[in-house]
Image (cartoon, rainbow, N blue to C red):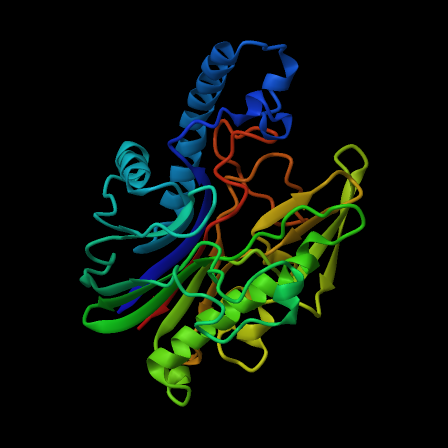
Length: 369
């Protein structure tokens, strides 16, 4: 018996228009900066037309990436709300794959932009095993104080012990697949933010992500008991906005690129890996071939890194010791440089920067339970 599990940051599956760019140029799409628009109503019409025109291509490409992942259970990040999820699943994904995801779960979380984590599940696995939701729980209301995780590093970042701990949520689902249990934890950790001046955005937000990782671990250990956690069937999935290694990219499209592996000593994800609490199974791939996102601020700052994870409990990882995860990169924009031997055929209509399936890549695993 097996189940195919995937995670994907679908990037701004949003049903709302944002007109704040009329007053705030930092929030204005780059194409509208080419035009001198002084009338707010005209700006709204242009912004609506721009979004609608680009969304159809984008969501077709997102659906292609999900179709290629072919997961029985799909964890998503950056979903606006349940109507958006229904509209995308029916209008794009169902039409793409022919059999949709009947079971859909989303609970509103804490993100200031209104983007949430969600889970889509088929009624049965590809091998015919029934997928059943037993229970679902949001942890969005937990505070640092609730789990005794407040510290000086958080205080230095102007946070309060009574602040909500998860920047989005840790959505917990208890699932039975052919009668066998799987506990699933879906997260989207604090973003690395934008570096200001000489500061490092990743390091300056590290304490928040570290607290989120500790909270997920504490929730799991409280559920199963510290002495029994290693034997449980659990998976932690999502965009964790941090990495333990990266592939530094040098050069330009014209001069050619070179790729160099670098390990990172400091990472919020050491909370999971440091003592074997869980295994990042993407580590089973070659060190140069684990990335799920291309980061660039011009030729001087480029790297490929893994931000999207499926962490498995020791028992689940051991039971699937020979499983190698897949990373679906066909929806990446053409500007993404691929290390030698990793090139893929991109989906039709992929652009230099957009449209694209997402800035992230789906990660998918086949698990025997």
